[in-house]
Image (cartoon, rainbow, N blue to C red; front, side):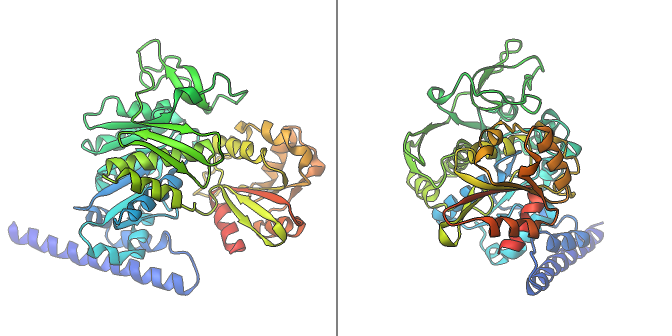
Length: 458
């Protein structure tokens, strides 16, 4: 029996080495061809040795970030803070958030594997979290929020919550950092034996009325007992100060309090380390939530408050996440990923505050996006309607350009304002050619449309 075990161990080790070498080789070939190598190297490796991810994670500190919106931004902020503190980190910074993406990220940063204290930090797709949590064996788990997203893959947000809960049960010792203001993720920390830590907006900054928003994709039932959930005050739709009269579930006490300041891009975080005054690149509330998740996680990872401040203030952002690019002749474009009703609603509300002349909406429904695009009808377009008079053109593009155009017309937009161009490269050219000196355009794509635009714009 021992001899058989040794033979099994030998062959597994051989397969592991072969799989990782194939990942490295595939990556090198793709890079030589000028192609992205964010997933394919890992896909090849996992065909050879399916347990490669578990073996690479074994014995190393692991951080996992999951949730509907803000995963990529939160991960990149946290990684930047850790690196500012001198830590070595391997991370899937580009957002390829399934197992093949994790292996590909490790292959891209293989030299860091030589250091025993290198940390692995992964943004994880919500549907995959339960499937691979036992392989990752995370020491720290961060949940951002849960909204309706890719209903064909996740179901409703309550079904997604069960997926995250199942994944958490496989890492009972892991620390949990999550939003206190969003009830679905906040509830996941209630029954855990391991510590859970919460960030949220100061009560003085919450509002009693945010205006009208479609409610079907926001939490309205208690995640514990499914009775009606009452919001006393709100920060964003579906987030704020809440309670359930039936079971007593309510917003947890805050371990990190977000205090936005009146000055642009200024905020304060109040936590165990005292008060940190910040001058951030972006001050949109959803970005403050992402920064708070990164700051609280870094603190629980042992990073001093002064380094957290330095890391957040020096973080320059990531492509297509509220990114502004200045072109020639004082022209500018703002790029923001949108992939669900909440994300697009918030992006349109941010856009409406700017002197925008052109808007490009690009939506595909490839496998990575989710085939179901019915969420387009759940977006709150009121902010876009409010600024429509200042727009010269709305260009709709991607494989779902016709559905976008139909939805906008159904919402009451003038068909003469809408230009349909299925080819994303051509759509971008329309915007670039139309934009005059001193003008601003917004570009809002979903995930694979973003990848298409990156190849065109770079």
